[in-house]
Length: 283
Image (tube, rainbow, N blue to C red):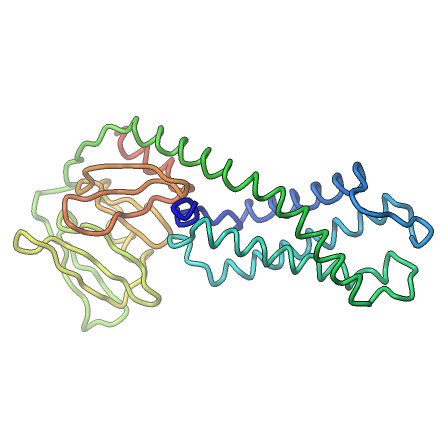
């Protein structure tokens, strides 16, 4: 169990994925409450029909989910996201939804004790129990599905090197945001580049070993300089990799992990970048 909770897990709540999640929360809350009436229902207290009440509660749950996950995404490093962090965030989200349901009681219930501690605890308990049940099933199944899918896809790749765009050993000038930091780079010597805030961390081959450079440069700017070289591939929003240096590709729930021919950390390929990475090895 400890090993499972420490496994990498994808950050799924951005772009289209965020809206799919919000929609899923809405549908789940509406269907579950309306179809099963899982908790005590006192219809004489309702200000609206039971379906309308369920609809309002589902909208509250979906709105809180969208806001929470979109804000959390501003602070999340998705390469370091794990199952345990996902579980903790979901638990926090369920507490927020329960609190939102409590604050929204005055809208749907005609009860003088709407804001009592009793109903606050009831809303937290009900939301946490139902939500935890769903996510305790979904997270392990999704983790297993994604890991199998990415492992299978990685196993079908046939690694091979692409020739340089021009003469071997050619260097190009890389212009940075500070002219005094401009430098020359042989693209064949690049192992990978990683975005670190306003700086770029480059790992390059140097005298049969490797060294690290830090430059005031964006990943997009470096990518534009290296566009003529097809073996240089964007694998993640924070990584560019020289695929000629890759010796092994494995899969996990987040996407791929790349092993290079140097004793460096494994490099990520995010799920959204997998099609482009696969296309590189079909050339």
